[in-house]
Amino acid sequence: MALFPWDYQSLESLWSGDMNKPDIREGWQLMIDHFLGAIVVGGTNALAVFTSRGSPGGFCLRISDDKTPGELRAVAWALSNEKPLEPLIVCSRGSMLYVLNAKNKQIIGQLRGHGGEITSIVVHPSFPYLVCTCSRDFSARIYDLTMPPRDKPNNPHWPPSTAPSLGGAPHGLQSSEPEGIGIGRCLVVLCGGPSGGHEAAVLGAAFHPTHPLIATCGMDRAVKIWRLPRMSFDHMAREDKPLFSSTRIHKARILSVNWLGLDVLATSSAPALKRRNGDRNDLYYEDGTIGIWRWLGFDRFFPATRPKPSKVMRGCASDYQESCKLIYVST
Image (cartoon, rainbow, N blue to C red; front, side, top):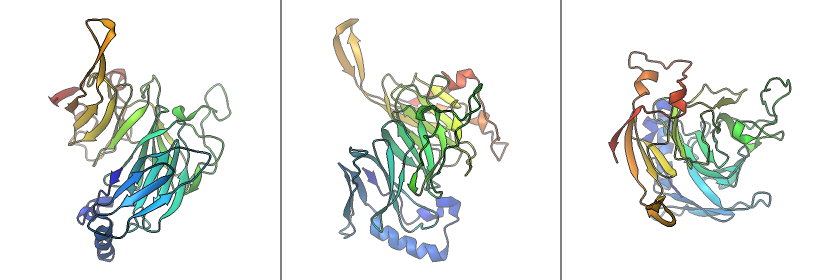
């Protein structure tokens, strides 16, 4: 489920304040009156929106597709630039991503890309048309809802071959069929793999509110901080080496990650399965933990004396494999 995330003052910060205009402000207040406190809940082949304060705008929409059976597990709210007064609902079933217009109660986008089930969906806090999906294929993908899907793949060639690669989704590659229909285009793939990406399912992500960064966490007990590369309409960026990676913060899979400040993050983990006195048959669960910690490498990549970030950011092997550049604030 996902709670409607915006209020009357949100228009001042969204889109860097570019949409905070008199002609939009009045319609924004009417939209907030209708959707404030609304909750979207995913279920089996259906999605329901429950409104608050006695508003009659709740509805249930059925999404039937025999090719992708299953439940709508991950949901999130988003907004588009063209129609900022018509909230969007982004949801997933299996490896498919759906975009719905909450005002018109219609499906306006259907996208494919991941090679495994999508586990979570997050939306950029300042640019609500940017959506990140995490998946069991060890990768995370960032979509732009202002662009149409790709008709043909633009996979690179891997030497010595001169033809486009036929690798799978974890390598950040596309299938030979069209990306989807409606709206939405994948612009960035945070690849999985031993070079620096996640080595198990990615369970959560969080965009930095002010800087081109995104943090991810997953089944491999790793927290990774990635630089958002320059996004292009023609080419899909692929990143396999984050600016920070650590598996020493928690003892079990990490369920969520959030930014609390410029360089302070909060992460939470599931209970850890342990052996008692080394006996493999005597097992118990150690309680999950919540950690608040500071990333010490922020000032190195984003120095206060430089107003704009560098075009190229690349750490050393210790940064993207097992970094010690953190300090605990509270656990």
